[in-house]
Image 1 (tube, rainbow, N blue to C red):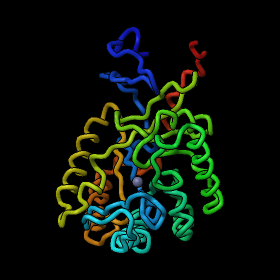
Image 2: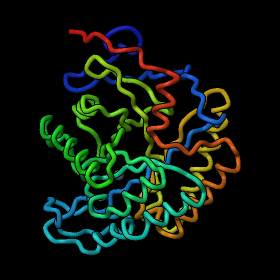
Image 3: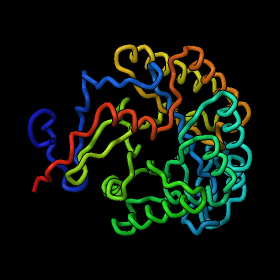
Image 4: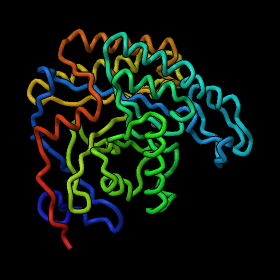
Length: 316
Ligand SMILES: [Zn+2]
């Protein structure tokens, strides 16, 4: 807790969860990934094209695409940007999934429910190939604008639509734009096994939520393919992936870690960039020490080896 002992400098915030600037510190837990792998690599494929903000959806703004950013009025349909997003859904997602199938990689799809409803064959392909469908929300919304009850309804609407379109209830959640102060508590109450609304660690960890323990599988933005959006070359992105992988792999000799890599079909599904992605996967596979894992598998392995301390008695 933040009001006593180590890390007690900051007072508990008036609203929402306490901050934890200590974490595992110098003594992270030791996790044994399956088959003696040293480093877990989690590809997070954002299957979301068609759920972005757009005037066509009745939104107050058109979401820009960094591959072709341009000023555009908020109250006119931006057909160019709509089309740039559509490439991901029509072509890019299949190119990336083809690569994964070719190299035997499984991933987690951060999927928006409306994106799969608009393109059900992608949902079927994800499930058939053994990928995880993790909820990225109903569509791109800003949960902090909704209020607690409406946010809970939106979470339930998303779950229902996933069940209707892919026959799967997501076990994880990753918020587009970011969570509200209620999101984690609502997800825990709705039975989600984990969320990825955190960027503050290299390993899963528990947080106290409503007197219980909730698992966080942290994510990162550094290796996200959006880093190369709007640029001709992605060599810098590839170099960053390889360096991150090599460094974490070395550290994993004593404490196995997790590398998360965010991908978007509209970016990584462009041919030149899929080629970069292939090069990275082949590099990682050449070490024989990478586990390309779904995030729910990572959550399950971690929880089995480091079970939560058990429900706490809520402090009044
Ligand atoms: Zn996303």
